[in-house]
Structures are given as structure tokens and as C-alpha cells.
Amino acid sequence: MRVLSGIQPSGALHIGNYFGAIRQYVHLQEGNDAYYFVADYHALTSVRSAENLRKYVFDVVVDLLALGLDPERATLFVQSDVPETTELAWLLTSVTPMGWLEKCVSYKDKVQQGIPAEHGLFAYPVLQAADILLYDADLVPVGQDQKQHLEITRDIAERFNHVYGETFKLPKPYILDQVAVVPGLDGRKMSKSYDNTIEIFDDPKTITKKVKKIVTDSTPVEAPKNPDTCNLFMLYRLFASPAELADVEGRYRAGGIGYGEMKSRLAEAIIAAFGPAREKRAELVAHPERVEAVREDAAQRARKAARIVLEKARNACGLGR
Ligand code: TYM
Image 1 (spheres, rainbow, N blue to C red):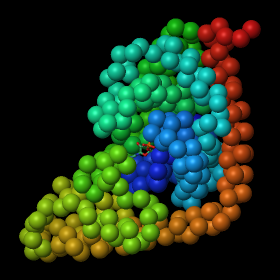
Image 2 (image 1 turned 120 degrees about the vertical axis):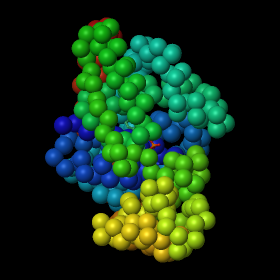
Image 3 (image 1 turned 30 degrees about the vertical axis):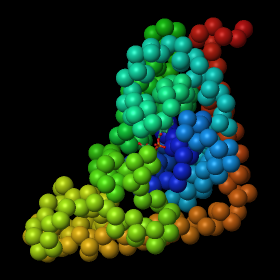
């Protein structure tokens, strides 16, 4: 099966990215034909410093390798190393009704947050459709917030196929219920734009500081608490073993566990969980040439796959000789 997904280089990756997407990337690289990319064309809608963008792209490649993507198993490339993407995006734009894009929640959200209503932001889902369709992807592992983009991708593919004849495969989203929306410090979806993130590779001190900021109610230690509505518990659940979880859940329901203790447990669990990846990351940072070699090799492989589909799409709509 062809698996594909992308992640924007718009700052450091957070634990929402990890549980909502990256962990699935790592599982799915086994036994599948996996393509993962750093979506730098997409990041142009928000990152406006060339220096920062280059740094973020390098950082995301390093982070993904440190977190377990294996360049022998998966093709880990940078989106703009495959410029075929933008050509396909134009072919798709030409069959995409404005109304489909106007109803996109993420566009409306971003404009509401004060991000300028530029055409790139508006057309973002078409570029994302191109990313996916260009690789004949069967399965796209993502968090819940990308579901609508996946639906539009399928709609665009169907419309192109209807207009020009069977060209694109229809991809399916792969969203795991338990981690579809990882909450942030304030209980809303963890997201850079809400400034409520815990970064995967924050130093231990910063992690502890951020965990202390997690918003809870003021139920006293001895009172029973409902784990199902507790933000702190939701995050802890991602890191704890089944035995730890059962223990903590029991103490929540019976009373006798305080939020202070939970915060210490959570901070320790986060620091421990990413310890080995942190070491691997430091090693990669010390050898940028290794990272560059992965990028170069992956770009060639990705481009080869992309050219096949692009050629088919160009032919279908009458471009070229
Ligand atoms: P991005 O960069 O915002 O996020 C990368 C991945 O992390 C998931 N995610 C979350 N999952 C659960 N809980 C959260 N709090 C959380 N925050 C982020 C996202 O759902 C995503 O899977 N438009 C995409 C990038 C993209 C893409 C693609 C994805 C571009 N082209 C093609 C798939 C296929 C984005 O901005 O993701």
C-alpha cells in the first residue's frame, strides 16, 4: 500500500504532531511503500523569513529521523525538492469550484486569527490535494484537523477523473480516534497558533514549566475526579503504561490524587519518552551531511514517482505534444 503524509515546517514539532501523526508514520513505514514530506511550499503561507524556513525544514527532517523514520524504509523528502507538485496543483486548481474552498474551516480559522487572506492560504487545500494525488497515495495518516482537506482531495480527484477520464486514485484518511485531537495546555487542540503547545524536543526544564501551566479545575486532592473530562489525564494517557493508567484512573475516581502529583508524573513521562530520540537528534545535528544525503536521495525517489502521475495528468488534459 502507498502511504503518504506531510508536515509543515512552521516551527518546532509538538506532541500533538507526534501522537496525531508521526507515531503512525513510524508504524506504517513497516510493510508499506511510505512517503513522508516536509511541506515547505505550504509553510510559505506563514513563514516569511528565508533563513527561518531553511532552518525549520532542516529541523523537521532531523526530528522525523530522530523519532524513528527510517530512510531505508520510507522516502523522507522535502516538498519543494519536487517542483512537479506545483504544476499538478495548477491542473487541479482549474477544476476546483471556488465554493469548495470557501467552506474550508482552516482557511476561515486562520483569517479569523488575523492571518492575511492571501490567495495561497485560500488555495492551500488544492496544493495539499496535489501533494497526495501526485504519489497515487492509498492511505494518508493525519490528525482530525486534516479530515476536511482529505475530503476535498477526494472531491477534486473525482472531479478531475470525471472531466478528463480516470487519472487519480482516491486516497483514504487514516485517523486514530484516541489521538485524533491531542489537547494543548488550555484544553483546546494543541496548536502553534493557539500558543498552547509542548514541543517534543523542548529541554526538560521547559517541559516541566509548560506542564505546570496545564489548566485544571480546582477540585481538592481528596475529592473524586472525572478522568474523562480532565485535560491533564488525557495527556498522561498518551504516555502511561496500562498498569500506570489503571492505577491513576482508580485514584481519580476514588479521590486521593492531586493535580500537582499528576503534573510531576506527566512531565517525567514526557521527558523519559523522548529521551532516546533526543540523543539521536543531537547526533544527527552534529552530522548535517548525513541529513543532506537522506534529503538528496529521497528527492530523487520522490521525483521519479511524481513524474509518472504528472505525465498521466498532463496527457489527460491535453498539455504537451
Ligand atoms: P500540520 O503541519 O499542521 O500538522 C502535521 C500533522 O500533525 C497533526 N496534528 C495533530 N494531531 C492531533 N492533535 C493535534 N493537536 C494535532 N496538531 C497537529 C495534523 O493533523 C497533521 O497530520 N496541511 C497539513 C500538512 C500537509 C499534509 C499534506 C498532510 C500538507 N500536505 C498532504 C497530509 C497530506 C498541516 O498543516 O499539518
